[in-house]
Image 1 (cartoon, helix red, strand yellow):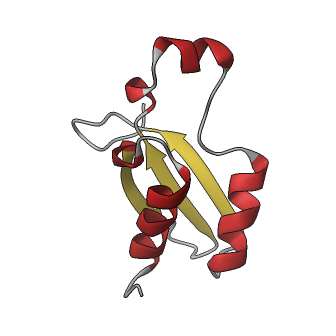
Image 2 (cartoon, rainbow, N blue to C red):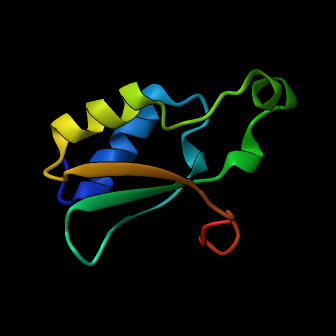
Length: 86
């Protein structure tokens, strides 16, 4: 159960991401059509970075679009300390 779209995304991360704490924040854009998911890429291991591991593959966006009423789902790199995009 979730009471907000952010809670749905957080629950999704707990199930599919090996380091779910990488999720920094979830925000909707002013136009209400895009959900932005800010992810801390710095927590990836060196092996994952060199292999090109990145949360936000097309299949990730498609899965979340089926769960949420947004036209677009964007995954953005975030600075974990400030919660801002980098």
